[in-house]
Amino acid sequence: MTRVISAVSAFLVAGVLAGCAVDDVTPADDTVDDSQPPQTASTDDSSPTPSPSSHDEGPWPSVNCAPYGNDVYTPYLGKGPFPIGTVATYPWRGPGAMYPDGDEDFRGYTAATNVECGGTRSKRGYLEVTAGCLDASDAHGVIHGTSDGYYRSFALAFAQDDPDRPVKWTDLGVEYRFYYGPGVGVVGNTGFKAFVRYRTEYDLYVASWRLDGVVQIQKKECGEYTVLQRNPDYGAPARGQWHTIRFEAAGDRLQLFLDGKLAMTQTDKTFASGTAGIRIDSMDGALIDDWRVFAP
Figure 1 (cartoon, helix red, strand yellow):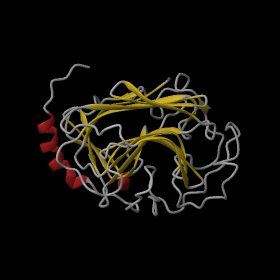
Figure 2 (spheres, rainbow, N blue to C red):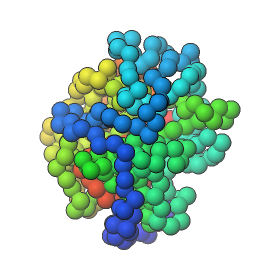
Figure 3 (tube, helix red, strand yellow):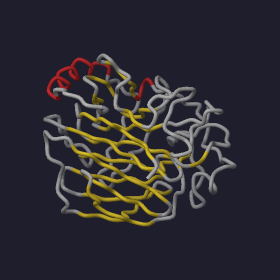
């Protein structure tokens, strides 16, 4: 889609929408890694512990992990089996709908709109914001962090015959464009991240492009982080320009692309399925666009 849009006007409208930025969680500061900080509350305190799925590839969430309580976030609540397969089999679509059909380019919002906040979870069926707020303005997404500066959201896909249980994707890629201006904070590892095969907040893969120039791929299993590959001198994304981060998982291969260039490749067999998502730290008012979940 061709657009001639002023990023400055989006930031101005963002100031109006920021009044909607009420979150129900205040994640703890995590300066060691780029995975999701511990989440201490949810919109439903009675949410059950993640349950095994007969369609999944093994014990849930991991054979090595002790059982989790209901304070550990997962998009896979309730009883299985959950649909499982590639993005080619299960495109990113909401329950009983076609939108966003694999690409959230915010075309569905014709005016400045609050898409969802951590405190209004379930407002949209095709995604879940778990920290901060996502607004739509001038055909872009506008990010607002929590009071601690964190933003997180996850893609939710559903099989046509199952509107209740989100899909666990196997091979998948996630990509989004981002733009940031003056609203840079100092909480956490400031920058832009992408999740693949996200199972719970304690079990996931995350790739990062940070403002201190660090680029890395990490694994988090049972709440413990492992750096799979790290380049401390890659260089930071420039302020006032559009950039793209893309993270792919196919088989045991993980690949990170930045602005269309392959930044690193790593292999790991820990997780075989999950969802995709975005984390942005200390970047209030940053813009995102063309958030895609695709078959690599």
